[in-house]
Length: 75
Image 1 (cartoon, one colour):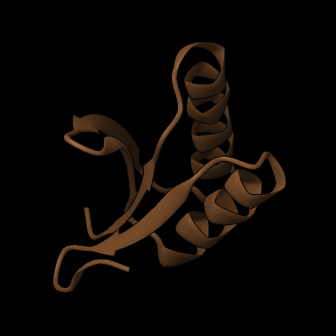
Image 2 (cartoon, rainbow, N blue to C red; image 1 turned 90 degrees about the vertical axis):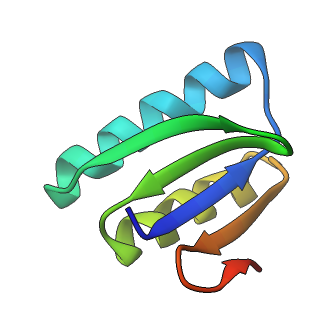
């Protein structure tokens, strides 16, 4: 998937983000997955709009995050 968000969260915070990613993807009718990375956890979406919504949730919850595209790397 091309549209990823790298977050630094653990425990219940990470579980909460997984729930949000699931909800966002269901509403957007798109797929997503999460995988560990050296710098945190990557939440990857098929749809750029879903990633944007997820970033807004991270910002609202004060979760450190960075976006990543498969073609250009971290931003």
